[in-house]
Image (cartoon, rainbow, N blue to C red; front, side, top):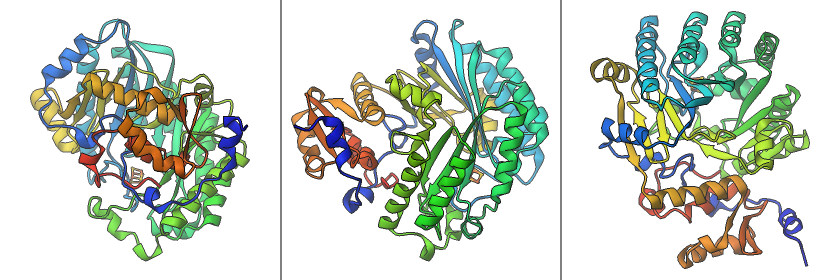
Length: 450
Ligand code: SF4
C-alpha cells in the first residue's frame, strides 16, 4: 500500500482549464474584501480594540500609494504624483493616523512586524523614511526583534535611502524583478536591466539589510517558458531569501492603464500554466522550498521554518510567518484586522488625507466576522497553509463538491484527513472555494486561479 507521501509525489500538476480559468478569491482574508460593507463605524473598531486579547501581538502595515511611473501590468492601489507636496500632505495625515491608532491599542501590545507597501515606499525621501520609522519607535511598543520590511522598486534604491532604512531598523526588503527580458520589460513599461537590480541589492546588503525577497511574474506579454526560467534562475543566482511568483491579472476594464498591454502578445491559459510550473521547478531545483502555491524560500529562511513548525499563515500580503492578533493598516486603502473583523481605509490618497484631517479617521468599509465566518476562515487558512484539513470538518455537501477534485487526483484522503496533492497545489484556491459558502454570491469578481 502506498504511503500518502509517495502517492502525493506521483502525479505532476497538469493544466485543467475548468479550474485554471475559474475566477476564485485569493483568500488573503475571509470573508474576502469583495464582501466588505459600507456601514462599518468607528464605534465597531473601538469595541474590537476593547475586546482584544491581553498583550496582543500587533503588526503594522503602512501604505505609500505613490510611484515614479506606472507599470502597465500594475494591479496595486497607486498614483503618479505630479507634485511633491501631494506626498508631503499624505505623509502628514499618515503620521496623524499612526499616532491616533497607536494610542487606541491596548497599552501592553507588542509590535513584531512592520511592513511598508505600496506603491513604491522608495518614493519617500531618506528624511521622510527616517521620520516615519522614528514615529513608529516613539508611539508603539516595538519588539527588539521586530521584522521591519520595505517593498522597494530597484530603480528607486539609493545609498542615502538604504542608510536611512537601516538606521530605522529595516531588516528585510522586497524588490520587484518581474521578468529580466528587455523585450518583456519594454512591453510592461518597466525597464530595469538586471545590472540595476544587482546594484540595488548590493547597496541594500552592504548597508546591512540581509533579508532580500524578490518578486517575479508569469503571464506577461511576450513571456515564454524560457524567459520565465531565465528570470527564476537569475533571482536564485542573486540569492534571494524568498521569491514570490505571481500571475499577471489582466483586468483592463478595472485598471485602465492595462489597456496599454498588447493583448495579442499575452500567453494563453495553458501557456500561463506552463510558465508557472517552469518558475516553480527552476526555483525548487535551485534549492528553494515551495511555500503554499506561489512562494519559495531558502530552507534557512524564517518562512521555511514556519512551515516546518506548522506556523505558516495567510494574510493580505499572501503567505507569511506573522501570527499577529491585531493588524493595523495605515494609509490609503490599508486594511486592519482583528479576530472580530476587518476595517478598510478610504482608497483614494487625497480623500484619505481629507478624512484624517476632517474627522480623524479614514475607515470607510469593512466587516464584522461572525463565529461561523471565523470557523470557515480557520479551515480555509489551514487548507492553504498546510495543504490538509480534518475530514470530520467537512459537511456532506462540501464532500460532494470536492469529489471532482478527488477524481482528478488533486486531493486525497488518508487517515481521516483530506490532503491537497502535488498535482492539486496550483488549484488550492479552487479547492478552498468549495469550503466557502459565500463563494457563489461573489463568483466572477475575482482573479483566475492560475
Ligand atoms: S512600481 Fe509597483 S506599485 Fe508602482 S506602478 Fe509599478 S507595479 Fe505598480
